[in-house]
Image (cartoon, rainbow, N blue to C red; front, side):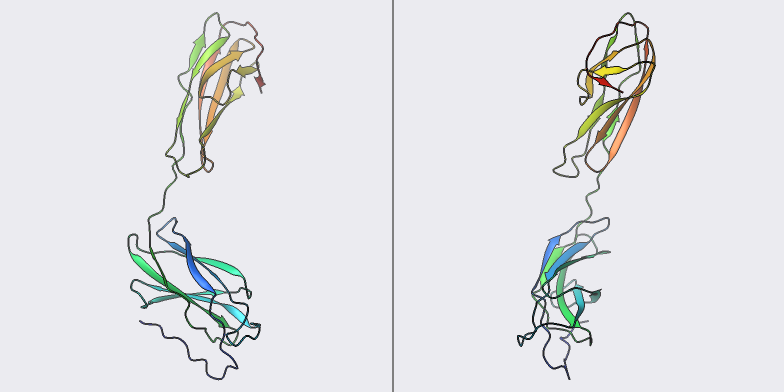
Length: 226
């Protein structure tokens, strides 16, 4: 169905069209495209736009043939707005256009058409964390931790970080480098300890635990984490 520009019969002046529609991203939990626009501040005759009611986003799979329309109510003259169109088919090129409408339901002309290929979402998997094997210390207070962390690199721009913490134990534990998966732990007292290694990619967090049975006590001062 080709959408025609509405006839504005009986309206004192032609309502201003959107100042421009442009794509801001193509991201999603399902294939989707986000569009953005800015409402004009005045009608086309120069009078202030005082009865703005919202915008309509038109789209379809061929140029100028918009088979779907979404009503995005609200907005103020001069305001920048955006809307995300969901439920699209990944790999298909969609064409988008928009109009503004007033409280009487009259629409402006279309603004400039834009096109975008809908894409599948980038799925962020949680980091993979291993605290390493459980251990038993014999006549020593220092014990090497053989943890490891890995990630899929999503989201981009967020570094993968990790940290050791003490879950339980009769004494304190100091870590030579609390942020390093592979480091050395120093136990202040003999007994059973549970240590946890946690990693985050900025959005998702994972952790794993290891148990250590300390048979020998010989305190050594480093930085204490409780």
